[in-house]
Amino acid sequence: MQKRQLGKDGPLVSAIGLGCWSFAGAYGPADPAESHATLARALDLGIDFLDTANVYGGGVSEQVIGSFIKDHPGRFKIATKGGIRRDPETNVRGFDNSPEHLRAALETSLRNLGLDYVDLYYVHRREPARPIEDVVETLMRFKQEGKIGGIGFSEISPTSLRRAHAVHPVMAVQSEYSLWTRFPELGMIRACRDLGVAFVPFSPLGRGVFSATPPDPASFAKGDFRVNTPRFLEPNFSANMKALEPFKAFAAAKGATPAGLALAWVLTRGDYLIPIPGTRSVAHLDDDASGAALTLTPEDLAEIDRLLPPGFAHGDRYSVKQWEGAERYC
Image (cartoon, rainbow, N blue to C red):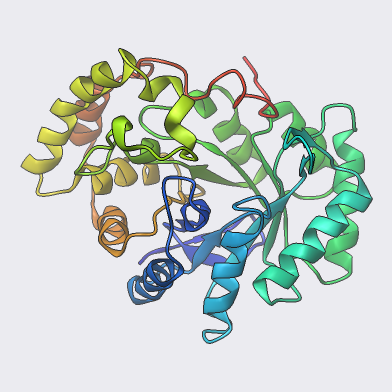
């Protein structure tokens, strides 16, 4: 597995990481043993960058990782997140970037993981009323205390990134980015390049649509994130599956899996992009890792662009409710 640098001064990590939200049941029931098998396979494949968050299953994802890494110390670089608060009575989601909340969230994450340090700590969602400069100062204190290695933000705008980076270098920004979600091309990818910040695409496989076996919305469990996502609702879903057929045929003609080809495309967008496909399946992880070994020619890229031009997807990537907290721009 090739390596890429996590920010201008950060550690080298595998070019493809592993998103661990599915360990907590985001896309259906999860089994810790299956998740552990996936983590073991990641080590076999040279995948050493894990991404999780304190709200993934209320700490379940972090705990699953923690129970694995206690027997495999030092093998992974780990990123986690804080800044989302849920009301314990109503379960309504809100955002809290206060020093008190972020400190409590980080300490809980460290306990869940069984660590005293994480390599990267993201603010999961920005609290709009709080100046981002103040938030960076909070994260700087965590770094000075030796609790985090780098500062990150999830789903912010390029202008917010530049404001934050002016206070202290930001190691990474993550946002959804794939062949069917290309919004970051309207400023964020360039801002990361200009500042020497790693860009970490989450859901680079379109929440499963680029897998060899497409998802079946009729089988989604109640807690599946995609249940109310517009692209997985009809008539959008059927239109999207039809649009993907030529791409999957192109992948087959190249002897590649659709997932591998989709990830190979992401990797061509810049050597500072480190996609984190999420899976709890060993077989799917093998497909994902194959993308790092694919070399795409200019002709390949032109054909992919013809088959799946920007904006081809039917429906929004989030519902109105899911959009809350993500900064929009352009």
